[in-house]
Structures are given as structure tokens and as C-alpha cells.
Length: 384
View 1 (spheres, one colour):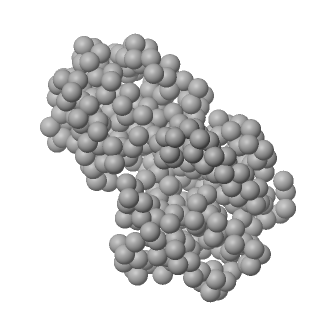
View 2: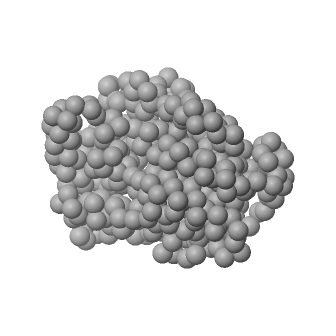
């Protein structure tokens, strides 16, 4: 394959940390390792701009931050024509449907590059939209209709829309978006096989050595359905579990307060977790659960599996497709605390029945970049 020039467009970038940022960084590194050239176009604040001064392959446009989600910005001074024209990309790859996604469409129009978009966030989900749009039913209905119309227009402008799971491919098809390909999202799993014992991890983190531990690690937002884990707290405690809900976000104190009101004794909120500390959190767990019902795949599941932790996922969700790849966990009926706790107990009692590392290897950034390059090649050759 010829060496490509690829422009990534994203609304979030360092110092923000989320699944999209992780994927953009890891995929860029893998593409560059193979000899391709990648330039990142992102909106951001002064902290992002400061990082970009050290990296000439990052172009930052001034952005306005969301009040509750300070790490996300909307570009307001998109002076990008000169930079992207000089770069002359073969592929413009959009990782957002919002401000930078719209700019990616404009950049495609005057560069002649092919436009590829990854559907990272399930913005067609009513559950997600209800957390961000007005609670007034009329306003919500009108806002949803306008947003859906815009999204369909935007994605139909793409030469190819990439989805990480069959679940998302079905949603896109339902919305009339047919120019799609299945391209899983990957991350760095090079540490697979490097064992950190539970005893050592729990000692470092001050977690109980003998309890069963069920864990979530990620952003604490309403759309992540963390309230379900908290509401299951009493039954989890009765089954001998400690619950660790690690990470930061706008709803952190909401769930801490809910935990206090419920009188939970074994639910912990350690807050923001550094990249270095992640390995200890993952290695300390018996069961990992991301209870979100709107995920397009879930990189934190891959990270947990790479440390040998089986995953407990909502039935019928995008995450449940991990179970198709091998015996890496169990699926529970969404919002059924009884089924959830029963499956968690089954997993904690029988760890030898699960092979999560085997499944995690399939989602190495090396493997997913192979599939991504196949999609790029298909688009450049004009295949549909």
C-alpha cells in the first residue's frame, strides 16, 4: 500500500482523556509506525494549544468549552484552509459529528480528499440525547428531529462511515446511512501476559484483600448508567462484593451522594485515575462492568480484558458482541439487579471459565489498524 497522508479531525484531544482520544493517539502511532503521515486537526483550549506547540503534527483551533464537560469544545475560529491544503491529505478521517466533523466535510470539498467518518458516540440514542437536550417534551422532540436530520446529512456526505460493531451498523442502516464498514476500535494491549497480582494491586490501592471486587473505570457521566451500579450496591454487598467506581466526571458527586443516602459501606469512588495507576485498578478486579447502554463498543472493556478481567455487559448492547469472540464474560438483563448480581457472583466464583486475554488480543491497535487501512484502500479505489 502506498504511504498515505491522513488528516484526523476530532473535537476532543489531550489533555482530555476518553475513548476517542485514546483511539486517535494509539491509531496515529500505529499508522506512523507503518510509514504513513498523520496530522491532527482539533478544537481545544489553551492547554491543548500548549501541547500542540510541542507537536507540529497537531493543529488546534480555538474552542468554546461546554459548561459541564470542560474537556470538549466547539471550534469558533476555524482558520484551517492553509494548513490542510499544504498537508494535501489522501484521507480526511472525522472522529466527531459536531464542529470538527462539519469542518472535515468542508475540508474534503476543497482538498479533493476522501472523507471517512467513525461513529464513535451513539448520538442517535434517545437515552443519550435525553441527558443533553431539554426535558420539555416538545423542545426535545423538535431538537431531536433537527439533530437527526443534520446527522443523516453529515454522514451521507462521507465516502465511508465506520462502525465498531454490528449493533451500530444496524442503527446506521435504520437511519438510512448505507455507506458503512465494520472497523473495530482498538488500543494498546502489549502488556497482555504481564501479570500484576491481585494481592499486590489491592495492597497498592488500599482495597480489601479478601473481598470480591466489581469495578468500573471511566468517565462518570449520566449516559454511563453508573446509577445502576450504585443501586445494586446493597445486593452486591450481601454477595460479598466491594464496588469500585473509578474515574472523574460531572456526575461523580451525584453518585457519591446517592451511595451515602443508600448507606453503602463497600462502594468506593477513588476519583481520577492516572495512566500508571490503571494497571493496578484493572488487576485488582474480579469482574469489570461498564453498565452503559449507549456504547458503540467500549475500549475500557478491552483494557480490562487485557489484564485478564472478565467483563459483565448489558444484554443486547454493543458490548455484548465481545462475547461472540470467545468466553470473556457474561451478559445480564439491563436494569435487572437480580440477574446482574447473580452473573457477577458466577464470574467471581469461576474465574477459570473465562479467557478475556484471548479476546482482548483481537482488539490490539495493530489488528484494528489493519482493518482500518483496508477500509481506506477500498475508499481510495472507489469501492462502495
